[in-house]
Amino acid sequence: MTNIPPLVPEIGFNELKVVSANALDVISQVRSAMLAPEARKRPPTFNSAQLAELCGIDKSRLHYLVKKGGLPGGTQGSGNRRAWTLAETRQCVRTVKADRLRDPTLSPGATITVANFKGGVSKTTTAAALAQGLSLRGHKVLAIDTDPQGSFTTLHGVLPDTEVSEEQTILPLCSGDATSIKSAIQKTYWDGIDLVAAAPLLFNAEFILPSRQKTEKNFAFWRVLDEGLTEVRDEYDVIIIDTPPALSYITINSLIAADGVIMPLPPNALDFASSGQFWSLFTEVCNSLFESRGDAKNFSFVDVVLSRVDRADVVSTAVREWIVSAYGSKVLSIEIPKTSVAASASAEFGTVYDLDSSTVQAKTLKRARDAYDQLVDHVEMQIGGVWAHSAQVVRSMMADA
Image 1 (cartoon, helix red, strand yellow):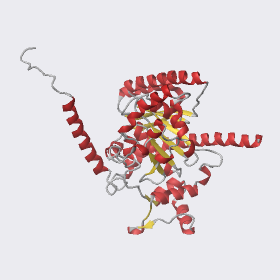
Image 2: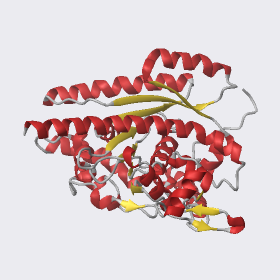
Image 3: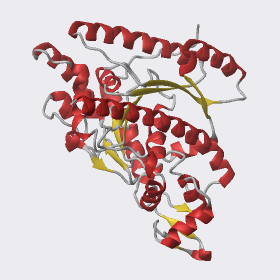
Image 4: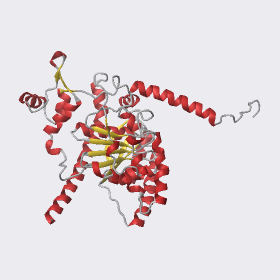
């Protein structure tokens, strides 16, 4: 190989530090522009057709209930068109669908962890869409970001690099400085969703938890988040936890705290192989941890959701068959398609529920939202099952008392 100039290894840590600083600066500028409250992270409004659909009634029934005074009347705009804010919409849904809401005297909130070894599988987008979709069905949601990268936090309109303090994360729980997650909770721009944020400093938990395990007698690092949620489980209908793309100490905590687990999985050979490693390592680690303490853990449901599905990709059809063969009934029939609308929402640090219907063709947006709506409906049904089981246990205890 002649005439090739020598490539001197001269890129040191100082040079990489400059590159890193520049990249972070550009990312910060982009996030700040995209997430300026007056520019991007505004909650959506809803017209009468959208509101009626969410309430599960026809428009004539909606107008009757509004005229009767049983529902908020919204605001009349141009052309006699009426619009409802997100808060008003949630109030309407909670009124009309009161029988589908949780009874806090019988059931604590259900906790769902969204997890996968790999990045780029729509894990965070799925978690955010679930939180928003469930809130639109009237439920009060707590979103917890346990990934130091803070993407889930970003989707809720908060800048992880500049707007999140240690006290607003799960780090005080991990260090033992707090026993409840309650003080870390903050409001978001989206009515019905509160947030426990994440930031790069959360990486410290991966050193703190094993250190405490070595030095504190009877300390169980895998139960820290589970126990930290005890105080707030009655306050929220659903708790959604987004995790790092790795089987870390934090991820194990997030999984052990959950009633149900959702794994987004693209029909891709490498992602499929990684998913098998995830479950193998998780069960191996947890079996050894739990057996040593005589502990146990059962989940109410485990869902594998095919994500980023491209129907035009011939190879994905074969991989889909492998996934179904491997996970059987845990694979949902609902598939999240790879769409340009979803990509646009992601580029604006949002989900399909954030998109303004006036900026996207209604039919195009509906196609993009349909799959997420079906997923939310399915998960809501499973959550109802979790509540029903809790209520059954409580009633049984009351009968025995």
